[in-house]
Length: 217
Ligand code: DX5
Ligand code: ZN
Picture 1 (cartoon, rainbow, N blue to C red):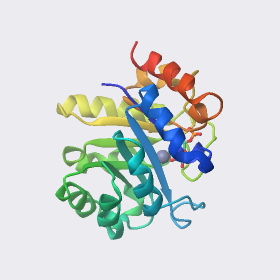
Picture 2: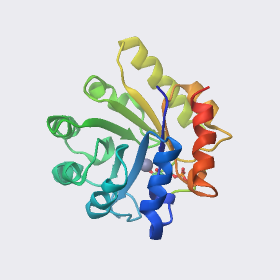
Picture 3: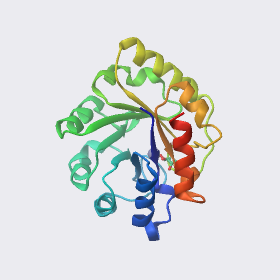
């Protein structure tokens, strides 16, 4: 199934709860939550208290993207805050396998992410134990960047490997997704689509409907 995961990094935080309700009502399946620590990525976003507070606004899946060093230190906190899926960066984990085990042991879905310049081969050893792979289509750290075209070759490569192995792993794409390029991204093999500025700039519900129309056709 194709899912839309709007990134609240692009939201207007003074009315965050209201905007999350709008996403929910418009039918977006996930809420993409970008946590940045100012070390793994240059910027700092928000953390557990914000997630806990918006947990009351929707029952939709909380797709928590941890752009933090050694995320294993905080898995318990994000579980407690209300995460449903926790995605960690392969580049940020000294012990990736152990980090994934920690997430799975809490009964959550586990995702692993790679930056544009990290090869797909890096995460092949853990493919059998993750629920989702997030292929970054921009360098993480900021919303509103342009998709780096070669990253879609990585989506194709990953899709081929997943199918060859007969696995049921979701392929998520994050960064620079627009209504203009989303079809190409789906064709490459992605099925979980993150969109920040393309959802929050303008009419949220209308943008979600437009994306879902493409995702469902
Ligand atoms: C980038 C974040 C993305 C970002 C997407 O570091 O992981 O989720 O918010 O924003 P857009 O869709 O505006 O590129
Ligand atoms: Zn993200």
